Length: 93
Image (tube, rainbow, N blue to C red; front, side, top):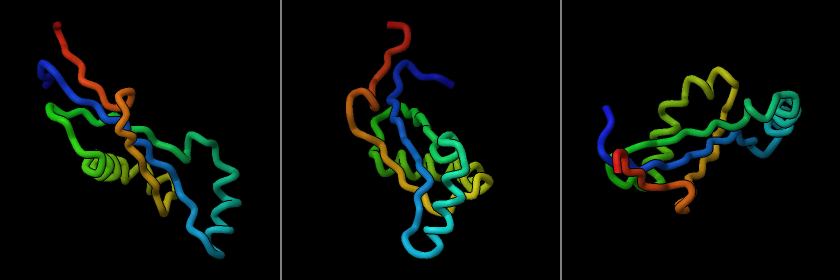
């Protein structure tokens, strides 16, 4: 279902190392994986403007199964509030 206009937010999730002994062990495992296994980008669309925190929460929820299957234990996320990342598109105008 598509509306006349939507707002889009780009959320980037990254596999994050936790400091300490376990983090050092994970660093060697992460180094062996390709960069595409360590980053997920999600475009969140909504009919109204959404706060960055809500977009991040949604992106984490819908990608949980992917992150778990890739062996992620911690995640860092960002949703830059710049016009390039969040824009309003009008369909049919």
